[in-house]
Image (cartoon, rainbow, N blue to C red; front, side):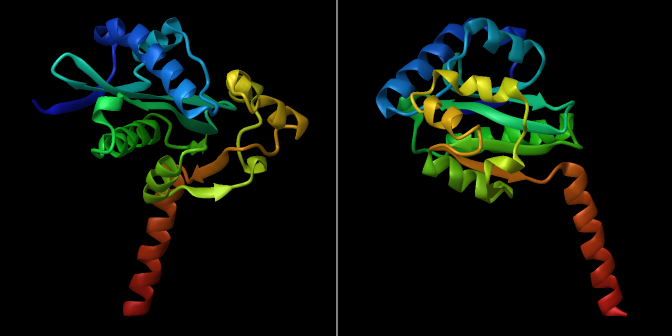
Length: 194
């Protein structure tokens, strides 16, 4: 059966508990920080159209959601999870691409950012145009950083005044910035052709 990746909605509420269990189990196995989410929070993301879900038929495969901060100046792609049975098949990359495009379409003026300890996620992010950055270039919204409170490394983050931790910060330009860069490059190319 083919795996479908689609924008999550109320039709997918029944997966919320399972998604949260996958987050808990992944955090336990990895021994690194994965922010805890409640089924209510996951359902809210589905209801708002701010999440994507991957399914094989009716079997859960993966999930990711977006959050916006500082009056939609920043958007994060958060909570990327792939069921262990489906890992190392390129599904995380497909989910990440879909959520990245959803975030850019819904919030075209927002810069897209994330923090991660996962080398695989860093590679995927780099393919999408993210660059590693210091935490000072990320959102200052305390709501985002509060999401790190369930991480075992939270004391490091707070002791460093939210300016560094074990995660790597990554930032991609907004859709608007990319369009401006593309236009500038087109103008430069046209001028050089003349």
